[in-house]
Length: 311
Image (tube, rainbow, N blue to C red; front, top):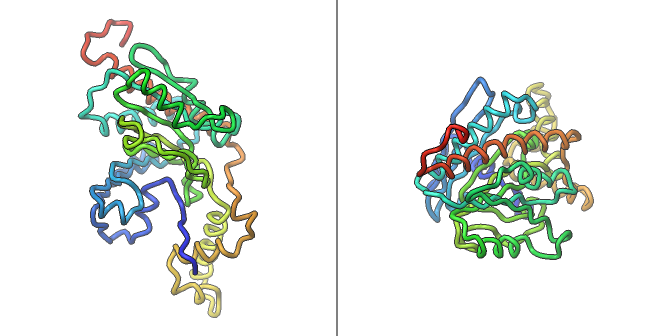
């Protein structure tokens, strides 16, 4: 079979290509469960070039928060998830001293699955040292997103850039139930094969934190997940002569590639998002904006005595 790249924006899913008990050289892996939020928080830290080669991702930290409750528009839940996200952001930036922060909401506000970034940007409280931008997409502005951001960066010279974007996953259950936070920046549009210039330290000479949520999966992913469930059911039934015997020698990646090759070109290029994506995107934008507003407020107040009204 042709060795195709099964793309995912999530470092956690790249780590899952290896067996759980296999140590991946150059990669640190940690997990933490919170039963009250039904949440699994995972740290994947790529330490060196060996880790980069194994994972296909740049060196840095990738923190993933997974919970189906992220979809729930309940205020207390939103506050709890925002608190955890803001705490993870502080942990990644604990050695940084920030006076100026630029927040960028990437994506297309007119296309709901891609509207997470602009919707977060709408809710950011700008003020002293806090700037916010929603640059739109090439089809709307005629300009590359990178070029717009670069111009703003040159004008305001922020200490750090925080970008928010919709991502792609290779696992259907992670769509809209996962938030990834990384200090490696982002390449807009990569999840759907629409690669643009990266927004990262190498291109902007500024540290870039990326916060993203998987909003789509490919048609191949859905077919693969369905076939995996079917094979699991047949295996448990222990029926002789079933499809399970045919696929015993196939790895998960090889099965994915085979199912992908069976699809028509139109189906292969299709990307799918949940039917209630409008409500989900709004809820996730509330959680992420609450976390960023909390983080930014703390940074602005750092180094001066806050008044009672500021607390």
